Image 1 (tube, one colour):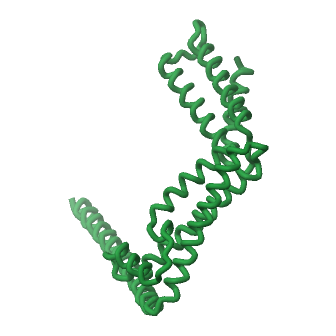
Image 2 (tube, one colour):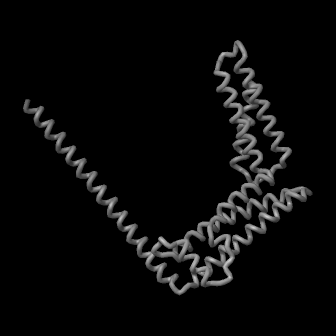
Image 3 (cartoon, rainbow, N blue to C red):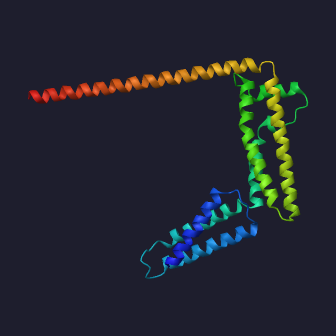
Length: 243
C-alpha cells in the first residue's frame, strides 16, 4: 500500500510537470499509455481504500468521483502536449481571434477599411486608438498560436492527415496575422491617428492624476477617522479616571 501511494505521488508529479513544461511534445500513444497508468493506479487505490480493514474509510462515491476527475485531468494534460492537442489549442485561439472583424477580413479598399473601423468602434470617442489597441493586444496571441503550430509540425512523424491539418492552421494563422499587421499599419498612417493619440495620452494622464488624488483623499480620510477614534478613546479614559 505504501508503494502504491508513492507511485500515485510520482504520477501526480508527472502530470503537474506535463502541465508546467508543455514545450516538449509527446505522441498520442504515449498520452494514452500515461492516462491508462493513472487510471489503473486510481482503480487500485480505490480498491485499497474501500476494502475492509483499511484504516482510512471514505464514501465509495467520493472515491469514484475523485478517480474519474484525476483520470480526466491526466487525459487532458497528457493530450494537450501531443501534436494534435497543440493544433486543436491553436485552432481554438484562432477562432477567438477571427471574431475580430479587422483580423479576419481582407480590405482591398482603404475607405471601406476605415468605414468598418467607424462601424465597429462607433461608441468609442477615439475609434482609431481603440482599434489600434485592440489589434495590438491580438499580436502576442497570434505569436502563441504560431508557436503551437510550429511545435506540432516539428513533432509530426509521417502522419499525412495531421500534417495537412497543421498546414491549414498555419496558413490561416499567417493570413490573420497579415491582416492584423496591415490594419495596424493603416491606422498609424491615418491623418487623424496622431491627434487622437495625443488626446488619448492626455486622458490617461488625467486619469492617473484623478486616481492619485482619490487615493490621497482616501488616505487623509482614514487618518482623520484614526484621529477621531484616538480622541474618542482618550475621552473615555478621562471619564473613567474621574470616576
